[in-house]
Image 1 (cartoon, one colour):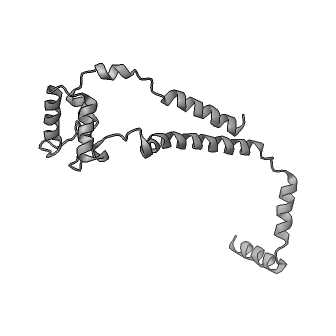
Image 2 (tube, helix red, strand yellow):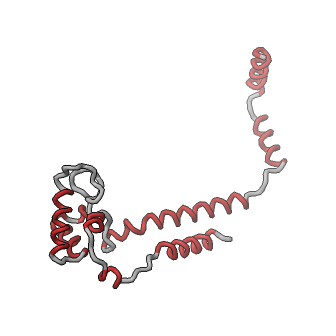
Image 3 (cartoon, helix red, strand yellow):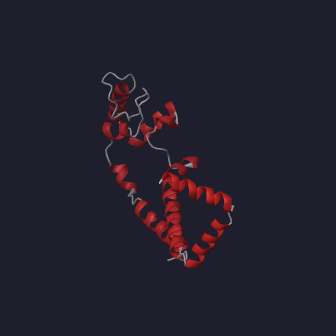
Length: 166
């Protein structure tokens, strides 16, 4: 199999595995929960966790945000409306995952591109190793002749020093 064929097969396999099959109506009928929404927001206290997983019991960000999310759910707001509210208020940094629009598409695609390129590199390298001819006696004769090209006095001196130390 040629490296190009391997790369195409790898790309198709990644596309099949990574392409999420979604039902757009399922999300609309789903009732939002504090846990689901807070999982999509990053805590801004500096812990680096999501609002749902922030491990500071008296966090100045996650505790009030969870209460505010619960209040918004009580008012009948959807998950996307609540996420959009926090995105507008704090910017893109509050989202726990990059959006799939604009430049952020690269953040979603680059891991798959890197895996595909790595697979192509491995396939190419393996094919080059397989096609490399075996070393024969001619190459070892070339190596022997290159050793004789050294200065004979230095060679004699080296042999003497080796004998003395042995």
